[in-house]
Length: 309
Picture: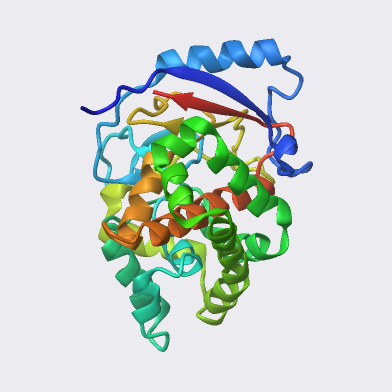
């Protein structure tokens, strides 16, 4: 029988507690909230979680209000993962995924991303400027150069509810601590190679978004942008919410939202059904990308919530 997940809300801390966050980044309105106040907010958020009504696509973690989709259709409640599908290529190479090993690197960047996106199974993006897509090269360099990024990825995957949901502990027991740590080091070392590859191929986040918009406008969210806000472009995310389970935050929430279910699906696509070590490295690669973004975009005072639902 499938195990029922016990709903709970946990305050992990603030990004600075993970060694992450940007003191000059998107300010959090919760920067002065007490631990008790943060817990109350997290519990209230847990009660507000909803089921996605578009199970086939994944949106970005961006918390700006979604006015609808680029084809004029109504906004959908989607699972969320940084950049939508824009982070697929970098994470695939950092994961040493089988598809990344057989791709012809003499191919165009468009052909490379298409092959990887085809395997993942969707293409999605958003208008209004995507920090995750635009920051691909910088984030992969951060994975390589900033120890806090890999350390934070390891810390997130060690949270009991996360480890159980993603199957981390059982794989770790199979391969042992030394091999487990080696997977993080592989992702770290691959970060620089991936950044160099993307740079040599002319990676441009907006170009990726434009391509998705042309072919899949129904999967491209049209986000509300403050054009008078030259620095943050309307970003006001007060929190980062990491979600275990099938539910997600509602459309009226304005925080960063990351569904581990979406990262799990990415890792499964990269590794197939039998390569459990490959699955774990792909998970680490995807978590590391999120940690790199969390190191670059939000304030270090931004609180991090774990929602189990």
